[in-house]
Image 1 (cartoon, one colour):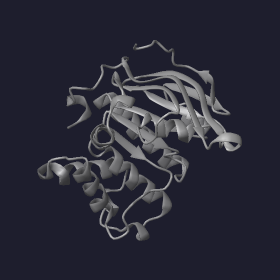
Image 2 (cartoon, one colour; image 1 turned 180 degrees about the vertical axis):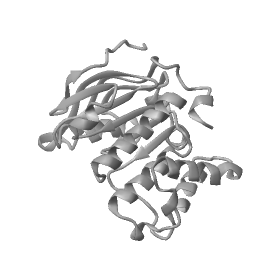
Image 3 (spheres, one colour; image 1 turned 90 degrees about the horizontal axis):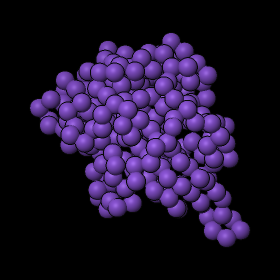
Image 4 (tube, one colour; image 1 turned 60 degrees about the vertical axis):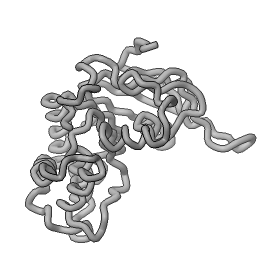
Length: 245
């Protein structure tokens, strides 16, 4: 179901994501490492947010927690007002399939499938009606400039082209939330700008929320809010937190 028609989609400006006192520790005892600490933030629906910081600052760990791929050691995470800790494993999986689009640094494309088949397969996993899948897949590929290459397999595509296919797969079912880890890292400046325009169009037309990580100062200029992390803590946040609970 498109984001604009999803009954659980919050209104623009309302909180789609909130974290309260999030702590994430990896390892135990003397080997314990705090990847995140005291993370309090609110992300408004219908906005584009960039997480920035050096390698190892906690950006990817925070993305994984916001997308329900990982759980905090302590603290709460709310998605559309729901406490993710209260969801079962299957409910979290269902949430990711239907309401969240994910773009990873590793493209995760299936080598034996064409670009089109990779995107269409993603729609099937999301539970979309098969009848409209072709149109949705082709529309997503066209948005990222890959419709003319949709019959090619990943091995026949450049790294940048594979990244664009991965983005098309993530947005084809028009989720309410798009989580993207360095989505323009493999793209040249022109194509990176095109992808950001696609994201902006999704925010404007569908009310989608986009949360991404980036090292590119140019990309930071194109988002609504920038959250800077350092050593697992938020050191700068342009988003004001207003607790949901």
